[in-house]
Length: 265
Image (cartoon, rainbow, N blue to C red; front, side, top):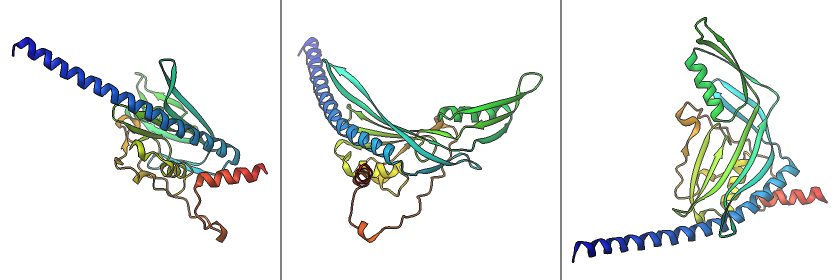
């Protein structure tokens, strides 16, 4: 076989592999769209229910080991969708649920030395926290002290998106239980009603199994681009009293819908 024939054969094998990969990518892309369409409906229903019922969800966030934003109430749920247009057809790429925790008391922190002030400022910026910074500088212009006043307002998001190259679903929580992001990867068929149920419990601060579901479950923490981030988890709330008539199993989404219906009646 000549060198030219050998190169042609290699190019043909590579073209077939690329075509096969492209076909698989398109298949996963469309399957992810169908899965995200269902998730969008579920999360949109959830947000509408929560905005009507307004359940009490109280959170706190460690800014540093001895400084905490306390007594923040979660509310104002909103859902948005990112779409991609292909051949005049819209496909869902991303579903985002946003909410925020707000409270009455600001947190005041004092940092001495330029490096510590810069570190704290970058940490707050990276987690989208609002703050006021007053700096004291030396005659040569160096920061010798910084006084941070942090607003009791923490934005939260849950982003569900697809990875069509791998056929996976990615769920990223931001500032949900603590400051920073945590990413979870799932097989397509793992993103089902039970998973959304546990995600809803996580959103409402209730005991849940969300972190242990899915065979890829080794959450990757990406907070503050490698800077210090607190690891103290928010404790689970105390168990609520259960009435005898409530012993029958019911999903939390179903319970919210029932409560919403009763309020409407």
